[in-house]
Length: 466
Image (cartoon, rainbow, N blue to C red; front, top):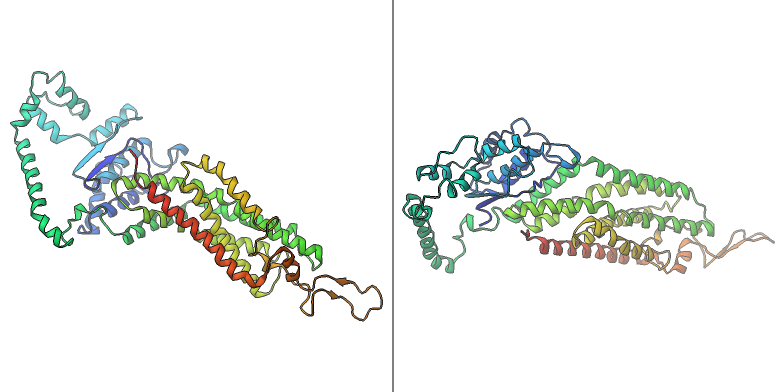
């Protein structure tokens, strides 16, 4: 039923970083059946754009009304109607389509929505003529009330040709269901396109949803550049704070603390992804009301759209921080630090979305975030040991047993050091390099656990409550 009807909500909720034409195409591609060609869909979209009087603004970004960017409020209302019209619904419901508009804007909306079929029915059955500039809804209410008080409308309907046609259609549909029942019991191949929950399968839904989210992410430069700038700044700040550390014991401690700071700062980036997640969930809630795409397509798209730029931003941090702080330059240590730090960035994003998935808004999420950031800080290795950052600590020497004497030929002041390699120091913190891949898999498991909860909560949230 939801696929065969259109519902223009009172609130005009639209993705701001797509154009009018792109938004209409997204709706038409996903709602009209696969039997309709792409060319036919696009031709009809252009007709709707012309009908709505939005030819000049078809390539403009929808924008955000709060920032006064994009199309006007009246154009947004027309766009809300257009999103439903491009699916060619059999019935179109509108919830106060002129609410919040001035007289001129309301008049334009009324002109678009002039209900010719119903008006013609009332006029043929005794109601006064509807003026061209009249509000269709108000005219029909008046025809059923004061101006048509002497007309028995129920009787007129029972005697009308329209009632006979409707009854014939109802009988035809009922008969079709009876005729199809034996076939349905043998095979589900006879399912009609209209009876499906979605016009297309999950792969096509995922393709379009992912394409649109990546397009919006690409156009959201302030969000992407801010994330990159923060990582570069933090990388340089921490790197130069612990600039070119030596190989002494105190330097080992400072090097460990530098790595700890990089872990803590990355975790704090969970706050940056949550407002964007809530906005995308709001758009999905609106679009899922007409079964445009499913919650799996939304869940996968909203999770993985964050990953490419997170990888770029975390790569920039590693470049700015690692060699500036003078960490171990061995290729296996550099490679492991890079892999684990990129995974840390992906974990931070998944943790932020994990919290957002079961909270109603970003205000509540921001109140809950400190619980998880505190736990992340406690278990990052400074207070309670965690093992994935041990490999970055530089070795002091490479030979012999525990500890070493700096000058074996000296007769005095031989300067004995209690650690020969950095691993001997990290073992006092319960870190062990040989466990690095085991710990990597454990950390990866935490990330996928967050992803699983996000998908689960989106499936619970998928029903648009009205």
